[in-house]
Image 1 (spheres, rainbow, N blue to C red):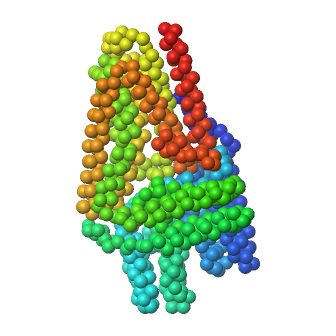
Image 2: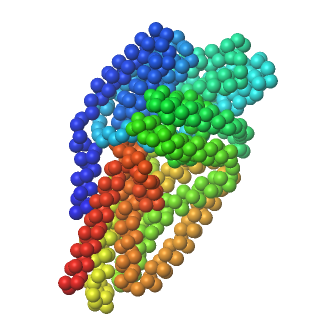
Image 3: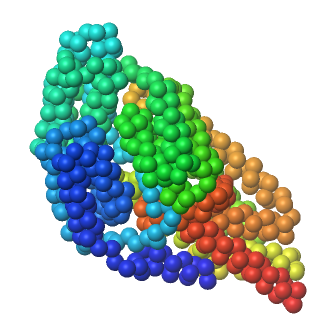
Amino acid sequence: MLCLFLLGFLPSLLFSAATTNYADIINRINQTFKESLALYEKGAQEEAKQVAQSAYFELFENLEGPIRINVSGKKSYAMEAEFVSIRKLINDGASVAEVKAVMDNLASEMAEVLPKLEKGTRLIGEKGDDSHLKAVEQTPEPTLDIKWKTLYKQIETKYAKALNAFEKGDKEETKFLITSAKFEDYRNGMIETAVRKYISKWRDSQIQQEMGRVIRAVDEEIHTKEELKEELERLKSNIWHSMLELPTDAAKLAVVTVKEEAQEAVKEDFTPVMANLKAKLTEAHKLYSAGDAKKAMQLVQNSYFDIFEASGMEVKIGAVDSNLKTSIESSFSKIVALMKNQSTPESVLSEMDSLNTQVASGAEKLSGSDSPWSQFLYSLIIILREGIEALIVVTAVIAYLIKSGNATRLNIVYSALWSAIVLSFVTAFVMNLIFQNPGESREMLEGVTMLVAVGLLYYVGFWLLSNAHAKKWSHYIAEKVSESLSSGSIRALWFTVFLAVYREGAETVLFYQALIFDAKTPLGYSMLAAGFGAGVIALIILFFLLKAGAIRIPIKPFFMITSAIIFYMAIVFTGKGIMELVEGKVFQPALIEGFPTLTWLGIYPYMQSLILQAVLVIGLIVGSLYIMIQAKKA
């Protein structure tokens, strides 16, 4: 019944609501741009910035998911960056013509993707109280080719040296280093050519004009190191986002020598960033406590753009720990959602404390993210994290076959296991081939796979539970030995093992692919291999321990314990599956304020996942009572 329910639930979740009018959303964004530009022309700079910002938070977020699915993740990411550029230009007092040029360019890009949105998949979602939870829907950054990474690192290094030269009062050296980054790395490294060929001449012109303006401003307009750093961070952000938008094969244009040895790392001190962010959040909390929720929300949003993102901290944390980056962004949006819902100042303060703690954790990770031992640790954690859940299900099925006298049918497990592993590699390859950013498609694939797996786990769990109440175990075992397994049971067991392994397999392959790209050196590759090998050995040892323990358990407790594990996994998969669909931007979750998050149980404070989990629990209770009653009658 649950399997049928899920098969009916997913299509209705995705397609049954009213059709989204993408053209209307785009028209409203363009109208908001006109209002913002009119205010800016009148000199109302702050109001113009807030109106332009609302176009992103209140309108464009409804387009991000569909653009990722029907066009590409990189296109969505690049368009998001243009909203940031518009806001930055207004904030810096740029000319009306400059602001209008970026707005017009973004408008033309939206018009370009509109036909694809109208013909493609429509993702319909329930609008909850946390409609601004932007970060919950974020996905890991696309992986850059090592050539582009090397060029970006060279630009970053020269900008860091330029800051040091400026601090010492050597403006000529400062200008020389920035100019060197422009000509030797951006132009001669062929970033310029790639941007003009694959994105637009306008984008390249915008970047180079900004470079020239910063070089000229060193003499007169820029007076402090902080001002120069802000300008250079903006330049780096524009270059980075443009690189992310480039197709994979664009890397063949890059002219750069990728050194085998580890390159000199330019360590940045994010202490000032954390202090500035904490001060702004404290100020926002005071405004909210005083009753000015609107200004408080604006200040939190400004802190995200002007401090966390503009400092480059967001991108760097995402490269080391994409889950932490997503969690940090989620906290920013949750603070705004709490304020919008008129929550208590104490609730808002608690989320702000959580955000500060996560940012500090991110800064700590950045301090040693390039060490060989950290690469070993990342490799070890990934294989253990992704393998243990699948191992529990596989072990339970193997132990069941042995205890029921069907050890000769273990080929069911091995067939499903190897099929899932092979298909995981195939899926990862296809994702990289078809999707420019495999992260978005992976979220949806994993979400759907998990929810289908829930149906099978539920079926197998009740099957085991019903056998646990059988009276004559010796007769039952003899019957199993003589009759073996039915074809239906074989298929159920095969698919249970297959989905348990496959749901994590493709993600594991892509994670290791990203680690390999970042390793760069022979020592790094060796440490990744060592971490993977250590993790595999640990999983093998754990498998034999679990298998031996399960086989020694008396038959009736074994069936009870195994069914309990299966039902536990079903509950966890349900919560995680729903959250994968959220991260894939299928719908926005409805926040239940104050509800705890228990990741080990798959419990998240969102209405959609909790309702489905409640249905499963109620079904489990009713089903268990029914089985007990039938067993007593027998």
